[in-house]
Image (cartoon, rainbow, N blue to C red; front, side, top):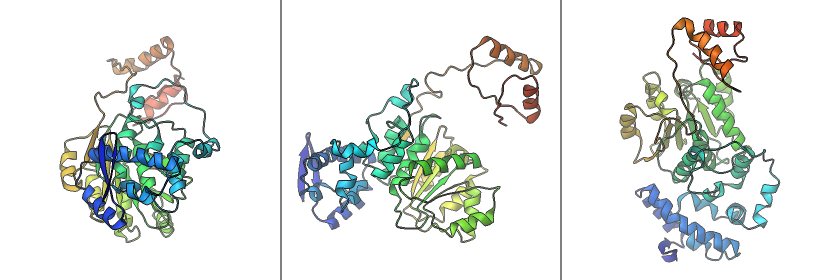
Length: 382
């Protein structure tokens, strides 16, 4: 065994792959936050070695295993050096089709991060290309907290406000951990609605467009035959609603023997009486070594029971110091039913409103608002 001391922290390294593998197994009994604190100084040493071109002792300082184990292969300079920060390794960024930077004011909900760049997570270059071309500049707090932990293989119970980047927080580690040479379903992302499934699958496709990862979306209300035919083709990541995926699994079409990660987005909805039986039945088809990530803005009491039964020593992320996003003020107008349209008309005539969404109880109310030409177009919600 060899050791390295960096910034006052002693980090042990192994020169043999066998010893490294055994140490990785032992890491599952270590708190994820402690692992990150241990690994971070080690990575800075690696950057220094690679930046100077001295990779003679890289194998000795590589382990602690974790998500960085596979980096030390033939593509060492293509994967890690791309994140090392020297000028030559940044040329690939100049060739990206990066959209115009978002100049809108950002609050602490999306800016209060500990790290500055996605490269600090040592992601594949192809994934980084998709992240930057998607328009992401730096990780939000929920991404900053969740991504490194998810890459270690630990279960996560994460709570954060809507609109702070939860979808990307689980899509990035899911895409990073997929092996495209293995044409089996490796990740399942469960969502409660068809619209959210389509949205999430689109995010995965855009982030992983340089990775050649095959993403499939399946929900109720669509052709079951088409889904069955699609599953005979390679699928690495499956996004869908619990009922449809469970149906395909019970038919023996959707094989989950090699599925290493299960993500529950909008976990509070998925653990409602409507979905929870299907979710629990679906988990029974997954291997015992699966990783479970749960993300939501709200966690009801039922989450605790589910967590105790299906999550193994989960890392808890709670960024809900308050319910609403910073910079948003909420008002409640108590009016009689017959006064609602007049109230809306007054608000739009007195206030400068550029964009708005009006949720209505039914199509009759929507028709009334369209009839009075209050706002066009109108987004309907029931």
